[in-house]
Figure 1: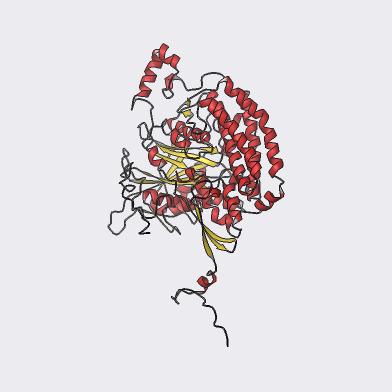
Figure 2: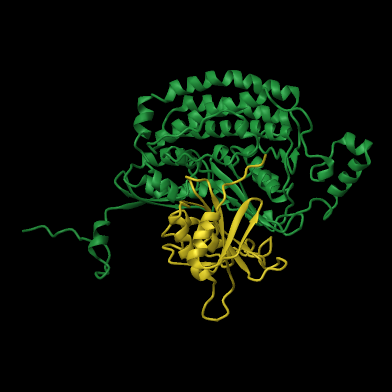
Length: 175
Length: 414
């Protein structure tokens, strides 16, 4: 028998009572809730108080080529509870900013709630180019500092844009 | 005549010469890695030292980044298993099992009882080999070379079992969607049975060598203490979290494969230091051996791969040559865009890998490869813990803490 995770109905009821109706879906026994970007921090803070003490993962999906997708980026917060074994997925959808003075889509950082978010959000910034407002140290994590692109975006080609071939060669004379 | 006082600061910029900076003048910076024998792999630490004491550390990663997640969007579900071998390469079998566990969850495939059972055995052998290496490396880094050789000899025995099973010692790529590439043969079962008989004696020898060794205990006890609250808040998992008193183990909490059929304990400690992590790993090897011993004598009969009707695993050659369903299934699985039915959905499948919770967040879009294949690596969250574990300890403790966290750069950077 495949394992059935504990229900999260009571948590969902508490969240909707406080933040209004939210879109939720169940797939393969996992409940995911879509939260507006403006409320994401408050909802996650509330869920942490409700007992979701473990932030399993923060990641992102670029829906550029996905059929029927309305917004481009979908952040994924995987939450779990170490006491009740409940799991909940929070989805936050953001788009590229329309105004010229903003360069990157921005979401509020959850690093103040979970220290686990520190490096996970840095990785999302590095690979997807999503800014986390309030993050104490938002630097690139896996790519080199001087890298300019965000390689897990769908418009970035698999073999790169020639960064490796054009990488500056440091000779002994110029070092 | 008085002697002129030594200059307080070598900098000419007097405005920057604040009290805080002046007090840090005597600190010096040490670059540890990215290529250093005690980091075992390519990771870098910038340590701020006060004499021998570590004031602060800045871990840096990315030296082995190879874009595994980007590759996952271009390789099919069966091809990508070769990439998972190269993630945590000290227990590749556990990664194979984790990857296909997540894929089968997305595709909604239910495995045969035989497959669940033999995957459990192999995953536990992988756990033993992983713990042997990580504990062996802690021993090696703190000066216990003999212990490391004992551990590595047993790893060789497990490699030999894997080689008999699937032909590869190191990069196994053994699992397939809906099954495995090779079923257990009587020779494999015989070799595992011998291992189950002989390994407890080595484990006892290892414990006698190190567990009460004065030098080892002095170097690891009270070093790198992680409290339970910190462990949960920082997302630690696996032996690192369990050594701090977190009783979370996905094998018990979210039983997958055949784990709920077997009798085993979760090994925990409350101290949260390097010594506790060592003890948890030692105890987990015994529990894994218990699972292997129980599972090995009760492997269900029947087919190992899912049936032809599900059209996910390749049929056997006999089915291909003697039945029309087998021929059609083999033909369709070999063609592009005719194989699996992938739903447009997203799921997260996690397993308890030797290092912690190893999960894959998969997005399917109907195509034959994943739209997004996110790997949740336990090493990243453990490496982020490093500065808070090492502050206040000495430089020689760096290798003890690093070894006890068991950070594998290939999994860290992906």
